[in-house]
Amino acid sequence: MPASALMVLATFLFATMGVCVKLASSLYGTGEIVFYRGLIGATMLFIVSRVRGGTLRTGVPGMHFWRSLTGVTALCMWFYSIGNLPLATSMTLNYMSSVWMALFLIGGAVALGTTRVDGKVVGTILLGFGGVALVLRPTIDQQQLWHGLVGLISGMISATAYLQVTALGRAGEPEYRTVFYFSLGGVVAGAGMTLLNDGFHAHTWKGAGLLIAVGLLATTAQLLMTRAYATGRTLVNASLQYLGIAFAFGYGVLLFDDPVTWMALAGMALIIGAGVAATMLRTKVTNKTDTTIMNET
Image (cartoon, rainbow, N blue to C red; front, side, top):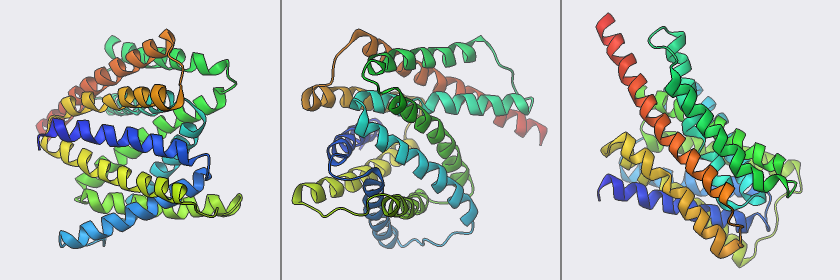
């Protein structure tokens, strides 16, 4: 299957997972959803590693710890925002991670003296945050500003997690191993959050089905997206990834009667534009940095 088709399917599965998380949030706490999502994911990745003849042993446990810590924190905040915001709003805020990542990478490159900040970078960041202001504006009237801020911060922390995933890849860690330890982190964090609150709830057929769906959809989408990035063009994949916002918007209107406002639509468009531009700038800076390092060596 072409990389572009894999990416489109992955974004659809992630948006569908968001629907299941939103429905499950009325039956379970955020910690419980994170726990079962991690448990199912870890089980699936254990099976994948066995089928591939791989191993889950790692020589960089510290890197996996920090990646799991940031990734699970972002996941918990994202699931919390999904349960309390319109689905498309929560998805959009989390997708701000591309803008945050560009800011982190370009800032790091500037600190190393390999590039300088120009107007394009500033414009991209302002464009992204302008979109956030428009997306959040409809939710402020509903006293949901806190939930919006949680969703925004989840995107920022996700950016740091993605950078750590890149570092793990450069260290030679296969993706299934990285996702496995991330899933284990979700099991531990989810169990801790649940036990500190109301404890685990009894299951119904509906609830159990939603939890299983969250785990299966999320893990399958991660594997598809990983394959797409490994075989396709980064910029094309990153652009197609934003289809997840469109899928989530459609789900929200059809299933949850989410309001359709011009400000929300304009904000989503700005964030998508900022995300694509950020990916282009990030790729340019990364290539320039790699070329500089090669020339110096």
